[in-house]
Length: 105
Image (tube, helix red, strand yellow):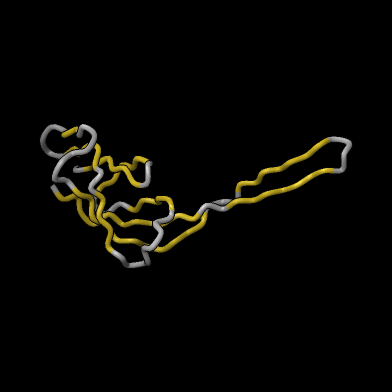
């Protein structure tokens, strides 16, 4: 089984051919667009693993952008006792789903 560790927007993901990964929102990419990541940190397959310093040369991960989804709401509460002060701030992170088509190299 061939897999690779790839860095996307500063975060590392383990990918295999056909896998679906959830990454931070890729601005400017729409559903169905092809993406290519050449920041491969390590690749493992039939032979011994190749580890990059910092990246493996000549290896790319090819994929297709799927839909955009949003994560669960993270709530931040501010409160000061006996002052009548309370605030609630919510945040939902947007993610892009990427289907890995091929690990080339």
